[in-house]
Image (cartoon, rainbow, N blue to C red):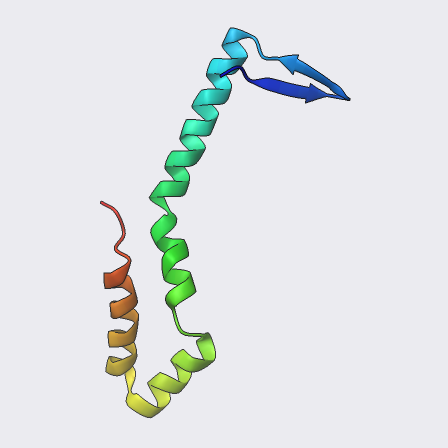
Amino acid sequence: MTLYRQVNDERIELTAEEEVEERDRRAKNEAEQAATQYARDRQSEYPSIQDQLDKMYHDGFDAWKETIKAVKDANPKPE
């Protein structure tokens, strides 16, 4: 697949060196995204701060820890 860049309204083909650099940049970005996907998955599953504080107040700190641990266990951090 040939890669291009846009300069003004002109589409210019990348040189071989630029293409290697761009593919390396994309691969690095994909690896970083994959390595931190667990954090984004966890974030969407954690209860809101208000709900977490309510949990601590009504059910205690240990119950809150169990809730958080369940989210972490469902979305483990890669080694």
